[in-house]
Length: 177
Image (cartoon, rainbow, N blue to C red; front, top):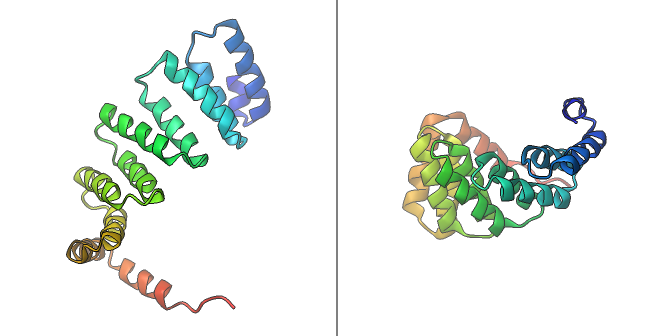
């Protein structure tokens, strides 16, 4: 099964992981690998079923929570993805990208306060990320917090001066005909 997985032969990997699971359904790893294989094929419903089984067998595995959050994102289940990323951050407290993904899910449901909070956590771990600052500035803008918005943009421009020019170019681009 693993050989097929590493050869990126997802269909055969799924077939062989299924055999492994039938031999011993108490092992969580084959469910995870089969989940990933389903994901590579774009079958996120099946991926979600498998990662749920893996989490049932190993409930505090942060990698499995990350996989389930991503499956939920692909299925536009943003509330469920938020729950999984939140649980992930309880287990892994030094991974700013988790807060970034959490922020994106908050954005997708229009929860700007949640987005600001998640990006503030990400910035506590990675204070020089102009990307996190830029996104938080946009969330502040949505909330009407012009002072905080301006401060975040200014800090992002200090870290990455070219960002200002990129933003100007994007703003002044002529729309396609």
